[in-house]
Image 1 (tube, rainbow, N blue to C red):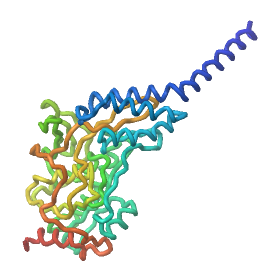
Image 2 (tube, rainbow, N blue to C red):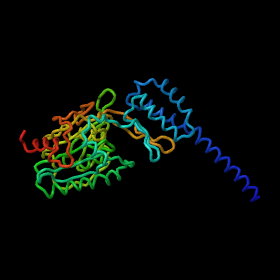
Image 3 (cartoon, rainbow, N blue to C red):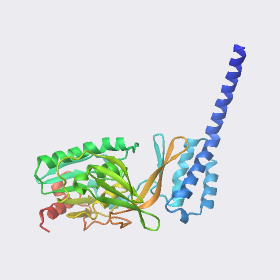
Image 4 (cartoon, helix red, strand yellow):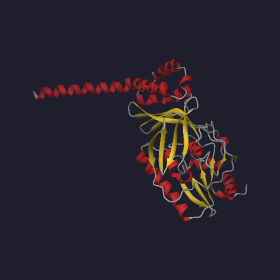
Length: 347
């Protein structure tokens, strides 16, 4: 009896493996794209502008050339182009599938292109003994949980705290020129002292009506929908707030997505000026949607707004400065010079 059982079990296991392999090579493509289209047709911000019957037919025809699921994900860029989903993406394992982020090279100075290529980390330091300088690059974690967001934001906040507590500064410069986005939460939490206990930005529906707002309160990052607050993450704040200090925010054509949200958070802040170049125009909001096979769809569902509900295709600085970047010597940087002029009250 034991031997018979083992033979039956072995045959059953073999059939199961064969079935799994067959699904992996054939059915999984259909399963994935059916789920993808369901979510796009239901929640994509510009869903009413798409001829879904045509797009689905063309996509399924193109998918016949792929032999396996992972290679079929290369079709996503073509799909996103057809529906204008410049801000959507799919993550699968270590790979990301989207329309590539591209900026015309003629819009960027050589200094900016060189600095961007180094994948600069967050930086907080003093310029000329009188001005705090914060370089906030992109923060693109794969983990968006409240706990992990806190572990990202708290060390950045602590670096700023050390500068504010150990120096008497005339004002602050927040540099978003290298910030192509990611997760806005750790960015805004780390900048809590400047933003204070306020609504800092919001989301608009397709009719440009505000549906949600995001606020900071005693170090907590809070999401509000239908007047109901939901705590997302937090930092442990220390010392006095800097809501009355002068702040200059610098943007570039590279500043995008969550980088633009960070700029929007300062848009209506008192004693604040925006300097630099118009941002890249990824001013739409995304939500995460789980798809089959542990893949993730980052889906555009809203427009971004400032704290007062205003939408901007691109964020246009108060003072335009073009191609005067100098990261080797910040005191020779045209954007920094304008920021210092504003902070020192000479203009």
